[in-house]
Length: 311
Image (cartoon, rainbow, N blue to C red):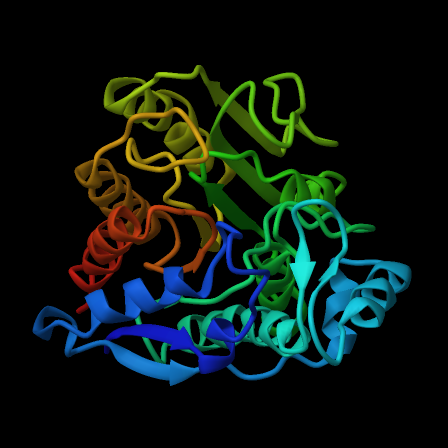
C-alpha cells in the first residue's frame, strides 16, 4: 500500500487577503517540496466535496448558515478580525473537510496505510457555534465523527502539535468520553484556552501548555511524559493529527523554538504509536505554519515519516 496525499487546487483559491498570514503560498510551498523525487510514491488523490449534512456532526445549523451567508461574490468578508473569506472559501472549506473524511475512509478500508491532507482553511479553532482563528469548520473533529458514524469506530484520538491551542476541537469533543484530544501549545498565546485544568467531561482532554521560548527539550518531554502515555491509556482505534508547524523557531506568529528535526521526530513517534495501538491507522491534516520555507521543510519530514511506515 502507500501513504495518500489528499488535496485540491481550490485550497489555493481561498484567499483571505494579500497580507494575511494564512496565505495560498503555504500550500504552494508544500506542493513544491512534495514534487521532489523522494515523494514519487505518494498516492495523490483529490479531496472531494463534503456533503453539508456532515458538518452538523461538529457544528450548529446557525454556524453553518452564518459561514455560507458570509461568502461574497467578489472581494472579501471578515467574519472576525482574523477570519476572512472570499468567493472560493466555501468550496475550499468543504473540500478540506471532505478530504479528511475521504482519508479516514481510505485508511480504515485499508486502501492506503495512512494519509496526509494538504488543505486550507485550517480547522482546529472553529468551535461548534463559531468560526475563528482562520478556521471555518473543525476538520479534525469532522474526520473523527466520520470514523465513528460511517465505520463504527468508537474511540478516536486527536493529537495536536500546532503552537496554538485547538479550542475548536476541544469544544466539540469536550462532552464525548470516547473522543480524546491532546494538545501541546504555547501559553499565553491566542486563543487563550488550553490550561491543564481543562480536562473534558471524562478526562478526555489533555492540555500541555509550553512557555514562550521553549524548545526541543520541553516539547519532546511533553510528548514523551504526557501525551504519548495518555494516548496509550486511552487506546484509540484511529489517530488523527492536527499537524501545525508554527512552533518552528522561524515562524512569525509564536515564540516556541522547534527545529525541522523536531517535527520529523514527533511524526515518527506518532507513526510508531499508531502502529502499536491501532494497526497503523493514522490520518493527518495541515493546520498552521506561516514561514513558508520552514513549513515546507517540516511538512516534508512529517510526510516522509508517514511514508516510512508503509508496508
